[in-house]
Length: 151
Length: 151
DNA sequence: CTAATTTAGTTAGATGTCTAATATTATATC
DNA sequence: GATATAATATTAGACATCTAACTAAATTAG
Image 1: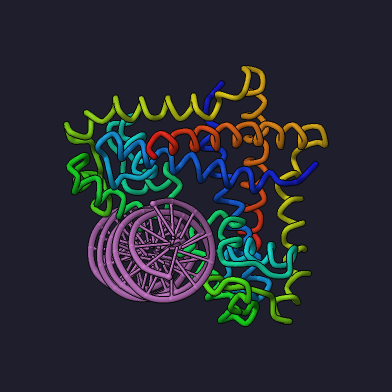
Image 2: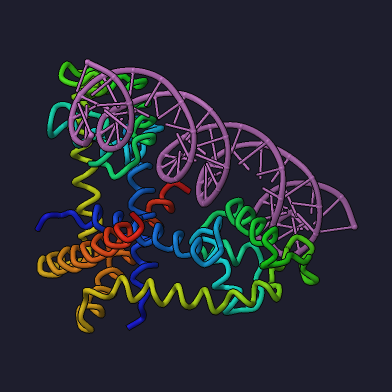
C-alpha cells in the first residue's frame, strides 16, 4: 500500500478540470469554467433555482455563486428575477441562449465520463464509485462532527 | 453505474485540502496551504532543489512556485541561493526553522492518510489505489497525446 | 565564433475562490 | 406587536493559481 490516494485524487481532479475548461473553450465558451457547468446543470434539471440552491448544488459559497451567476448573466445564458414568495430571494432561470447550451453541456459531460472510465472495466467502474463514495461519506461525516465541536 | 466518479473525486479533493489547510492553521502555520507542503516534502527528501524541480514535483507552474517559495522564504523556512553550476538556476534549501517543520509535516500527512483510508479495509485500500492509478495514467496519456497534436 | 534557440526564473495581470462584513427581509421570542 | 435572531444575497478584500511577457544565461547550429 503506497498511501498515495490523496495525490492521485488531486491529479485526477486537476486534469479533469483542465480538460473541461479546454473543451468549453473549444466549444466557443471561453471564460467558462466547470463551476458554471454545475450552475447550468441544476437549471437544466429544475428550470430555475435560488442563489442559495445553486450554491449548495455547486458546492460553492454564496459570494462565489454570485460571481458565477453574474458571469452567466453577462454572457446572456441566465437571468435573475426577484422571488415573488420571499423578497430576500433571487430566482435564476435560463434564457433561450442558456437553454440552447444543453446539448453542448451534455456532450462534454458524456465525453468526460467516457474519458475517466475508459481504462476501467464495468465491474471496476462500479467498484471505483463504491470506494470513492465510502471515502467521501466518511470525510463528510468527520468534517461535520468536527465543525459541531466548535459550535 | 452512476458515472459520478468525477464529482466524487472533486469533493474528496476539496475536503482533503480544506482539512489540510485547517490543520496547518491549527499547528500555528496559518497562511500555509497544501502546495507549500509539497515544496517542503521535496526539500525534506532531497535537502535542496531548484525552482524547476520544485515546480515539477508540486505540479505547479513556475510562476506559482516562485510565489510559494517567496512565502516560505518570508516565513523563514527556506532560503534561496544562486546555483554554482548554472547561473540561471536558484537552489532552494531548508533553514533550521524549516527543518524543524519535518515532524509536524509528517504528523499531518499521516493523519490525513488515516482519515482517507479509514473507511476502507486493507484489500479495498489496495484496490482503490490501483483504480485511481489506472484512471490517472490514462488521463495523463490522453492529455499528452492531445498536446502533441497541437505542436 | 556568432547567431538562434532553449532553459531558468521572475514579474505583471487576470481570474476563481474564500472569509468577513453589510443590507435587507423573514421568523421567533417575549 | 416590538425586538432579537436567522436567512438571502451582495460587496469588499485577500489569496492561490494561471498564462503571457520579460530577462538572463546556456546550448546548439551554421
